[in-house]
Length: 130
Image 1 (cartoon, helix red, strand yellow):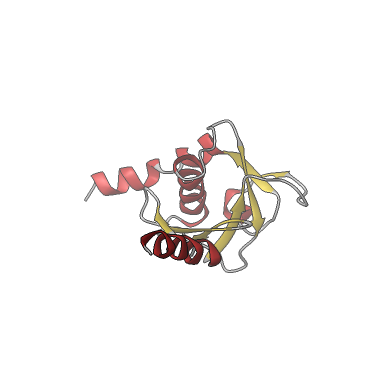
Image 2 (cartoon, rainbow, N blue to C red):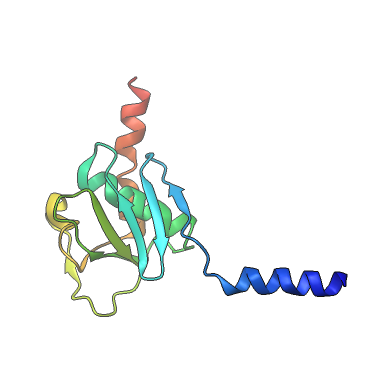
């Protein structure tokens, strides 16, 4: 009987997809992983720099990406409130993130994970001045 209960519990756990887990990036910005990549929700008051920081932090700490790996905007944000990022450039036309403010609205914009994480310094400087 005990074996049947354990088998049933395992069956239930695998029958339902895992729910998306919320991750709080170093700068306090929320990131939610999904099957296509991960969504950054706002920039924590730092606009595109805050969004890149959060995406880089998630890519490094949750996805296990290397700092030299490219991070891409998968689905841009028109209002800069949320943007989807990915580590996979499939179906994207990679382009330089030359103008950082507009980069989160253009799918294919990309930076290395390490470059994205460098924007987390904004949050550290602001926090230390309070």
